[in-house]
Amino acid sequence: MVVNPGGAYLGADLFVLDIEVQDGADLLLTTQSATKVYRTPGSYAEQRMAVRLGEGARLELMPDQLIAYREASYRQHTHITVRPSSSLVMAEVVTPGWSPDGAAFRYEEVRLRTSIRVEGPDGIRLLALDNLLVRPPAGDVTGLGFMEGFSHVGSLLVVDPRVDQALADDLHALAQDHDPRTGISLTRTASGTTGLVLRALSNSTGELNNLLAACTSLLRKRRHGQEPLNLRKH
Amino acid sequence: MLNIRTSTSATASVGSYQLALQQLVDSALPTGAFVHSLGFETYVDAGVVRDEASFGVWLSAFISQSLSYSDGLAIRFLYEGWDAGELDELLSASLLPRQVREASVKMGLRLLEIGAEVFPSPDLDLYRDLVATGRAAGHQPLAFAVVARSLGVPLPEALTAYLFAAVTSLTQNAVRAIPLGQNAGQRLLRQAADGVAAAVERIPHLTPDDFGAVTPGLEISQMRHERQRARMFMS
Image (cartoon, rainbow over all chains, first blue to last red; front, side, top):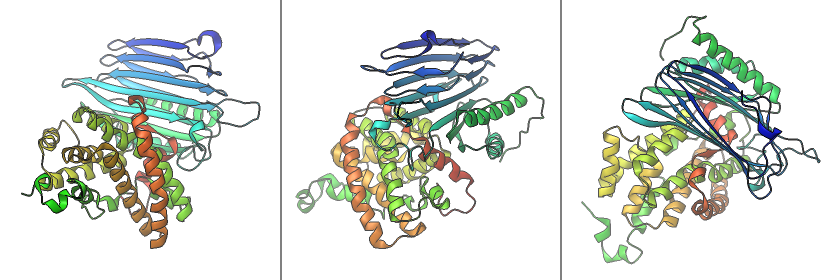
């Protein structure tokens, strides 16, 4: 459990987290409450997190939603290194905070940059670079091609030896029962490892959390063998 | 084989690279751009992109986002001396929607092949070798940048030409798919030229942290295209 220090992030705050999940270990990491970023005059608030997963190690990274308030600027850099046998699930939700005029998107910038590397027998390869950038003052972020009329964005990243097109299809089927506008795709394959990315838009944290929880439940169920693993390939 | 840099005085008088650059970005260059919508077909299917104005909105978003933060920045970094193999891996990792990643490589491999035939250079050989040995995928903006740089095309011109060529292909595809009139297509190109010029101004000011930045909307549509039932385009 990460307890958000001081209750919120303010201008020029820098939080550095270093996490190692050793071979065969299992960690569920969440926050105590939402990460709130208030006004950051002068300089942005920043979180830098380095994560390393050992052989057979498992990490579920499930922070509460990020709330960026009026005039907030936030950068999050997450560097993750996994082994081909590691299992990573990372879920995030970004929401605009309340502002006095009731309008959404009063924050300056939210930048969530996550890189995932695989350390395999042929060296360290970059598997995925997820660089989510929403910068409301730069123009219309609400419309077509940007937030499509929605205010909240959710992401799920999965890197696990069992990621394949069948899993993407199953998560897609699951997402059909939920309201958010969702896209799912597979990353490149590096060192025999493939990742899965889910991105969803909604107007409600609750809807996004329900979708992400349903997806992670399915992944857990598979992991613990409570349901036969389907290894069919397309 | 013709070496464009030692060509006739007639071509030298219009700039040694001008005609080569025109050939490289001509929409008749057979890279297969006509089979890719890079996500706009998802909007067409949903009825969101349905006419000249709505396609113009999508195109403008695509220029200011994907074409700036991915293609444009990759071209600039290659010109600045970044390693082609490293940039290739960054593109493969950051183009998260599978069809868009595959489109970039399909068109890139064709461009590498054509480049080797008509504009060979040691740098192009090096990049082709990375691809042939499985150390790189072969992405379109990098294949273009390697050839353009070897021809002596200055960066602003290379960026302008590449971005406008991408915009032209997409507009031609929209004219067929939506469909739009030929004159509407020309009006869209005229309008998109302003977006391209703004992107060329902005790309030199972006930082390495900006590389591969995406908006959720464009990306989700590119991902959803994988599951669209009836489609004209591969992406």
